[in-house]
Image (cartoon, rainbow, N blue to C red):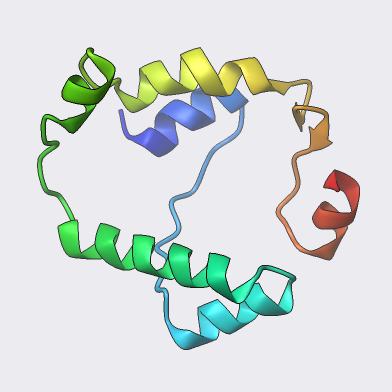
Length: 107
């Protein structure tokens, strides 16, 4: 089961994977929606790292820091995501595709 499948099962809706290319156009779009340039730069660096690491194996960091093995996407979805999602909302915020309407409803 993929992470998308696990999240979709908990949410009761399909979840699509969307490949993020952290190029200048993507970064400018986030800044236009109100994200700070510093926040966007951090996200871009994070996504570039994800792309560089690709399918690398998990290291021992989770085990060392938390004292337990890493959870699967399915376990995370059922333990964490399910607690915040109820009745078509995420912690009281309607789940929408995004955009200005979503930001106004959720702020």
